[in-house]
Length: 99
Image 1 (cartoon, helix red, strand yellow):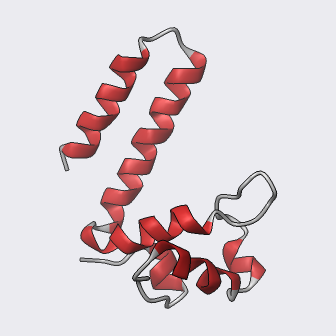
Image 2: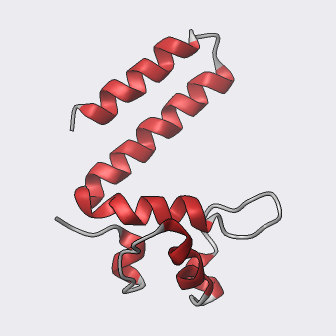
Image 3: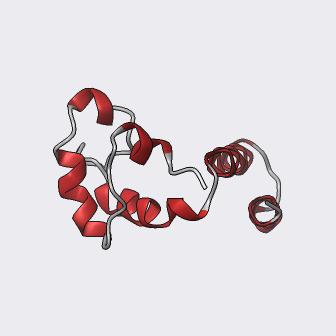
């Protein structure tokens, strides 16, 4: 299986614990982390990324991309339409599980 792009590009190793990944991310140049999700205070959301990095090895990169696209689509439907929230979330779960 391919490793997640962040782990591939930065040549980072998979963390054993989510908090361990925060210090790893903080050592990267700003250019390599500017696209990463941030907390309200502007700091990198390292804990969430650590959880993702711990599990990314279980998926092909294209599966992760499709999953993110499905979540984005669900988010757009939730905030821009009157569709039933349960239906939207059920559809995204089905999309995620079919791979």
